[in-house]
Length: 464
Ligand SMILES: *Cc1c(COP(=O)(O)O)cnc(C)c1O
Image (cartoon, rainbow, N blue to C red; front, side, top):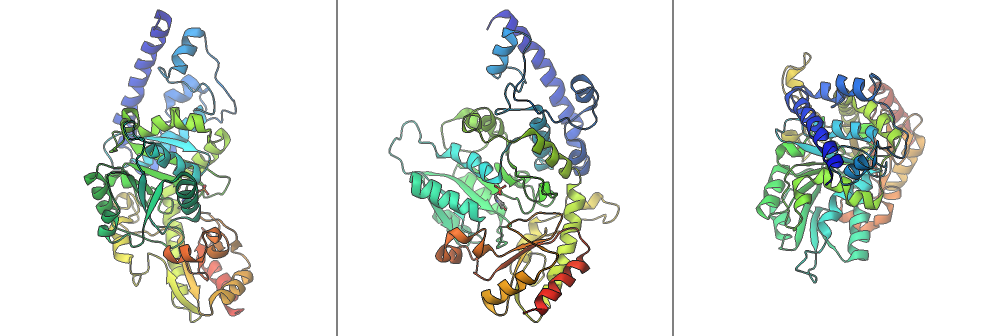
């Protein structure tokens, strides 16, 4: 390293030290809402780097210019904080990553890092694929991983077709994820990780996450969770010991529905049985600087700031959406044309007690309104009507205000029929395994007045 490069590295070391002190001594001490509003975006950052802009600027620029060749060399060797090229990094992306890392790491003492990507599916791939490399001394090993069978249709296809059929990497499905012995029976020395989605979309599967984390760690492998449906306002697996969390940021985190995004958040020093020290030390930064740079599934800086703006009100939004959903679920549960309602908040739901162990509105105990811990169950539910698929389609077509769309997590209410949309390509047998009946209607309630949504459901139910 020449003297010029060395000077840049020393300057960066000082700036990085100040930044981590700011995060450790100030930001990590704030409540969830303050972190959601400000993230790590400081007065100093605004004044020094952004002309005092109080809102994080959208850096619509492909690349960063350097003062001289020494600074360029230091940046491209990842020796100084820099963004170089927007496929690798970008300041606007960094603001979103800081906020998500801090929110997902809320209640956890250690450090967390985040890498945002272009979609939830890219998040699943970038969290899983680095573990699916062959170990250097074992060219013939048959790699596998274990996942609960009740997962989002796109994730199912990525595991079942892209990884299993096309690459020969075995995904071992756990059909009853509440049964820890079933998870355990699927693990061997070639298992690379446990993957769990909870609550699952659309079936709302739930299980004892702490037991799955313990089992993973007893076997020297990481526990990866997709908690898109809960959001960090209700569940933060890393604070329970998990290694990696993935999100379809498209959903409740970007409730306004402006666009598609994904995120991977990891704690430092994850557990893994593969021989890659950089990967274990700081997984979020590792995937960002290396595999994701090479795969190219980066997010647009424009989308990053739209999403960041949505996240500022996450906790209060999830509270309102959950309460509206509870009211609608209770209405459906009492309706004579409804055969069954699947909402984790209903006391008669078989998974209500295990869900209540884990789904808590963050900081409710510090809230003027509540002053104590409060369970909330999110805004996803599903239900079946008496009369099967024909009745379901007729009801669906009768909705006037609730959108018919393959979407969820919105500030607006949206309904879909998974067997003819999101989970169509799985086919009937696999849908049975994942517990998705053909006449299941998925409903995600927004922030409208719940009585108006109940009125829309009522008139559609009257039409069948
Ligand atoms: C939607 C969804 C995904 C995929 O995310 P995209 O942003 O649509 O790519 C993954 N997991 C869950 C639970 C989802 O709901």
